[in-house]
Length: 202
Image 1: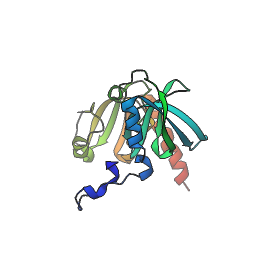
Image 2 (image 1 turned 120 degrees about the horizontal axis):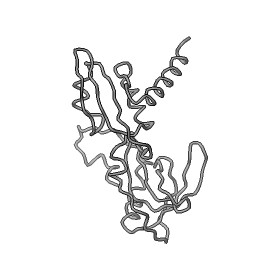
Image 3 (image 1 turned 90 degrees about the vertical axis):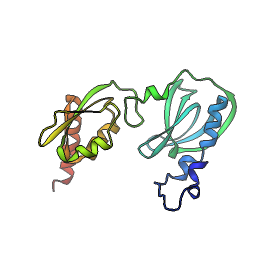
């Protein structure tokens, strides 16, 4: 697959490499999507061990430096996301399936990462003024609006699902960012920070 051919790029263009085992099944998956074939594979779950899965694939999505297979699980009769770093022995089988409609753009339009089943909320973050140029140049999300700028802080308003990935994104900013709303997300971050404090308070 082309993503595994860095020699086709300029010798002085350096990209972050994706582990080979995440992209080695791309051609098989895309071929199955084109022909509405079912694929079968072994899923090596970090928590539940190994299991056999069958699904009708609908897309491959990148999130947080990992690739995910989005597919309609034949046995569970529901859509699932599978980290391709945990997929092994994937093969197309002689079985056809047209999955229910699943618009990838719509499902992930108001989320960060791979989760998409939470209620969208208005997220208000307050940043130190030192972060403003960075946030303007590299927005957190397309819904971002900057408001209430002062000599020391500014607020960022977002309309997003409060996912785990969003929480991790906020924590990346460390002491430069504070969650103002919603209260539930603020409480989650507070609990996480308190647990971190306990780890380092010795």
